[in-house]
Image (cartoon, rainbow, N blue to C red; front, top):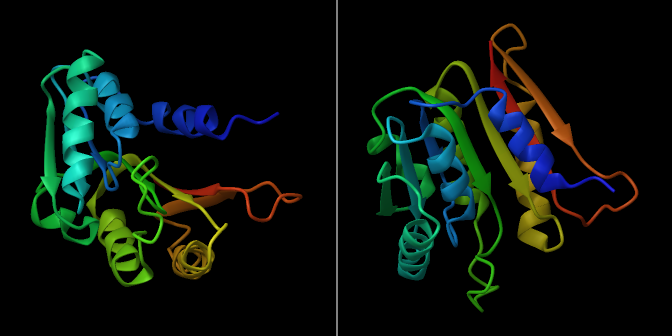
Length: 184
């Protein structure tokens, strides 16, 4: 069986290393933030964004308990405003769309209205040989709509500047899938 999370990390690790700058655009409970923090190490920087105070609390606690270096900053701000806070090119960015696992608030999900400008701005934040990974959860109406809108937008990016791909299980249409944007 394909382990989507392991595959996502493999793609990220082909671009991200010690001393780099990364962004977790949807921090949730901080698992992607932890991965990015440990990957860039003490000389790197990680910025993480979420609109929910519970996400900041859970992530800060998780990062301290998992032994992450003090290389991270957490912001209670929508992901579409990340470029107002991160002023340097990034080597990796991660979006994990949908709702925050364990929050009990399944009605509070990422929405196209902010996800689309967030992804567009994130693409603009990428440096050379960088990657943006967007995990989509089509098992609910907004997730399905986000995925379609993202495919339409990402399909318009110049193939001379970026490579855009998608990994999806064809025989499981409501399973999560992800898209990647890699700069040349």
